[in-house]
Length: 331
Ligand SMILES: NC(=O)c1ccc[n+]([C@@H]2O[C@H](COP(=O)([O-])OP(=O)(O)OC[C@H]3O[C@@H](n4cnc5c(N)ncnc54)[C@H](OP(=O)(O)O)[C@@H]3O)[C@@H](O)[C@H]2O)c1
Image (tube, rainbow, N blue to C red; front, side):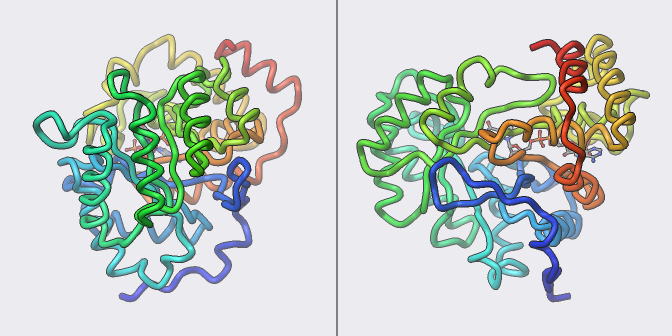
């Protein structure tokens, strides 16, 4: 059936300015790393995307190697694009990335101009798009001069194949340098995409200061720590969880680690006292600092999205709650 978007979709989501730019991103964005490859039924993928947009999520995040197999999430997204999203293209921010291994040989990985430009051309073909809104260098490459990577990003914007560029997984000083080079080239860095969650606070050690000073946006990936911060592993291993159905990256020994589970249980107590789900509190927590533009979640079911977007309506944290959270997870 043809998709018609919920006409009230913009009424409940919070949109936050991305650094010093003209772009607003939804407080919650959706990533297609998991659940859009060849192990997830197409109809389920479609429902996840439709539900997200109906809830006001205007940003879908991909990468060349999302699958499985590599490229499959973009390939599927191309079909979704043709079926559902063409009429809404101008209401969407679609991103992709290159930086990890994608094809064999010396030109399918890292940060060369050769790789980035060829990879984006392939991504656009798979997604049936003329351009993406944001193209990222997916991870720093210690062996390619940063100038070369940044010049490739600049060329990509000038060629019209991306409207904006970003960096991902860069450490604070690498990020500052890339931001400076891109600014000098006349293509400002729109956004940084680092990992960040209650169980992973590395960006507070310098990166958030850099992004604040440079007025660059920040979209945090895995804010639910791959699902661990939903509390779903507190009572064993659910059959429909990521660990059970797609354990490529989240292994049982990590999800069921007793030390982590004790922290999750304590956090869950705070969320319950606040009258919200742990997932909602975890998302609200990463968004507490305005330097964070958006929390980039994954979802295996539409209901998870409906639950998660409620995070934007949570009561503000009290000082006491924040102190209790710090005491549980450490600073
Ligand atoms: N730049 C990078 O290097 C990089 C790296 C990793 C990810 N990313 C981006 O970040 C996105 C999100 O990563 P992620 O999927 O690991 O993030 P996440 O939001 O931490 O975890 C998402 C997973 O948690 C579970 N979940 C979500 N909401 C739930 C709820 N309300 N109740 C119960 N379970 C819930 C689902 O897994 P199950 O239901 O299957 O258990 C879902 O797939 C990716 O899609 C990608 O776009 C970027």
